[in-house]
Length: 203
Ligand SMILES: [Ca+2]
Ligand SMILES: [Ca+2]
Ligand SMILES: [Ca+2]
Image: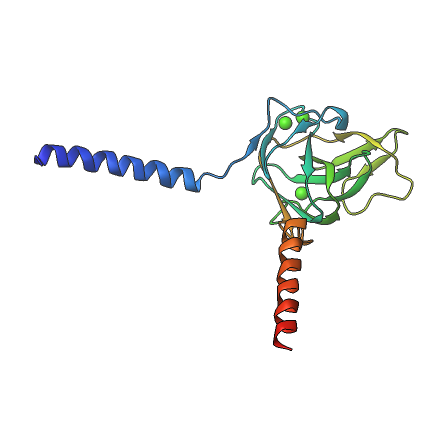
């Protein structure tokens, strides 16, 4: 092999290696499309457990629709470094479940909530964020909503806001449903049956 050829091959190999490394380190994310609505009914469907968006001037907040295939403890962590994040979780019926302002690092938000499988909505904006229900009651999106708070129509910022990018990281604990799937149960059942047969033979 000519030295020239060898060099060109090495170049190609290192380029391929670089690409592979980049692909492995780049986490998939759902990127806010334009400006996500602050109304729950017109929320953007986020298809990844990492959501990246932006709060611009005049942006009342962003709501994302997320769908979970199994039950578990959902943890939502907001990180920004630019805005003072405030987040809240809503169920499929638009009921407010829980919100958080500053439980994360610095003024970032962090919350955990036990959920069932299904559709949920996550709202985020810059402090101070309020959820407004169909009866025009307002809930400051921190802690649990007051009793009797109805279905939420929108989230809204009611002061001058900071602007900037944010990331929402969603994680479920357990990651997969802890209940064994039917196929696993079937195999387990066969194994137990086999053990029973072996015992009978030995007797
Ligand atoms: Ca936005
Ligand atoms: Ca928005
Ligand atoms: Ca905050």
